[in-house]
Length: 286
View 1 (cartoon, rainbow, N blue to C red):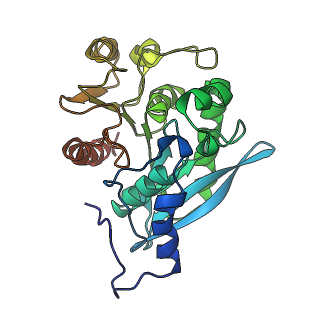
View 2: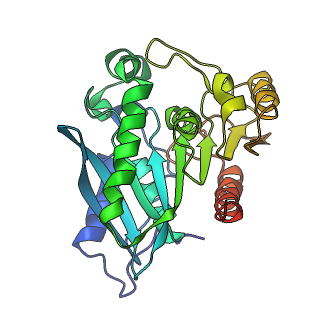
View 3: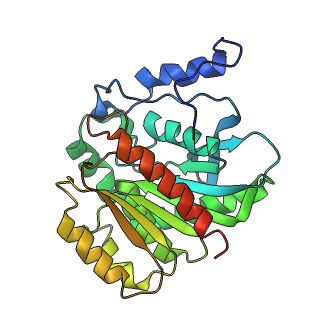
């Protein structure tokens, strides 16, 4: 498992380490302040992190890339950020996944519509940014992200996986339908029944069509994604042949993996990370 809240092996914090730890107070979205004391900081020991630009047509979208040291190639894990964008929590999660042996890249899927990290609340984020981000745009950006890493010899392109949180969790369900070539998807508490003008289909709508095995990780105390939603989703998944399944942690709430929030549930988060790794390993030969 990952080593977190660390100091370098020599007992000193170098400049890059300082940048990571300073980000705990400067890199989070305004809408999530104040930050809970449980927020995790993962250091850069054994991994290499960089900000990169992913070409998408005439645009270039920012992304955060983290790769284990060593020759690889490493299985790929694309990270879809939560509603608060590519802020410090998601970047830290990328570092944790890299320490588990993944080539990790998280594109900023809101880049064209605006910087949600500077907005004050969810309602403002929804109105000014999220309501303008189409499924077609997101799928194209994720396609471009996977194409971008083909130049890296450290990426195992036969082992492409995708994981997402909240808004990014729904993105995983939809992208798994869009791109049947990925090995697996892992959706942390992604909305199952929601639709909008820019996302006209829900996860439930496309569930029977899936060919990619997706693991859904949900909280039993989630007031937004209810047990009824989960039961309906599993029923639709069972109509198809993807082998997708959902695990519900009865005592966990929405956002149980988000260690910087009061909703954090360490037990559920730890078990969910273990399930993610097992899921990827199980389907690597698919």
